[in-house]
Image (tube, rainbow, N blue to C red):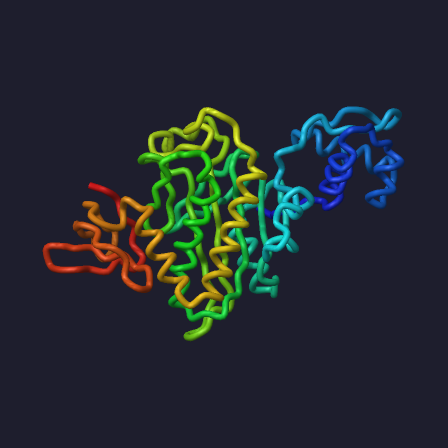
Length: 328
């Protein structure tokens, strides 16, 4: 499908109403603030209401936000991301095919590092290995970022592992038992609530750009039949509703720290690999089946210095480069 970016004036309406949350804002004042007509303000307010934003009032009396909307709009996210590389280029879509596809296309066209592409719903969400990612409207985080690190292509896996640590950090206050499943899934118990898709465009010795995509099940209360035994959400696991804005901001702030540290500190890669190994029940001592090179069984034996998974088999140590693993 054709993904249409959100009309930037919608976010401005929300921002103005939020800034004046204790009073009723006249249509004239709103029109002045966002540079349009009162008639257009009414149309924008109606559109926001259709998207679930609770706005009181009408043109004769003015408008007021009933509650702060849990929408991942640039005007809401950007103030929470100050001092990060992700604060300045946030592209919002109410409905998109795939945020990773949008980000890869934009990166190829020159989008700056730190560009963020976020959607309220995906119609063609993608996971690793050509899997789809169920992306229900307004309940999850579907977010992709553009990076342009001055690193060789061999470092892309470490960046992906750092992304997993960032997701874990973003929800750590929940006290949930978050498990990291190499290389790109996060589980609560044995059910998946988050996945990471990292895609790269590179030369032999240089990364042109990387897109890291995050899918996080936040407030889903049900899943399609084929997923309900294997998927969960933060809401299902805790019994309470979460702020997607807060989770998304925490995620991007945490990933900003991991990424900057990786670029700036010489021992950062070792720290990422060590922390991933410490926080994952899958990386060491786990009986697994590896879906790679015809498939094989073994016991996980830690990560090598590039982040690849070592598996102890009947024929010795084998390195898993790109296959998926599952416990047996």
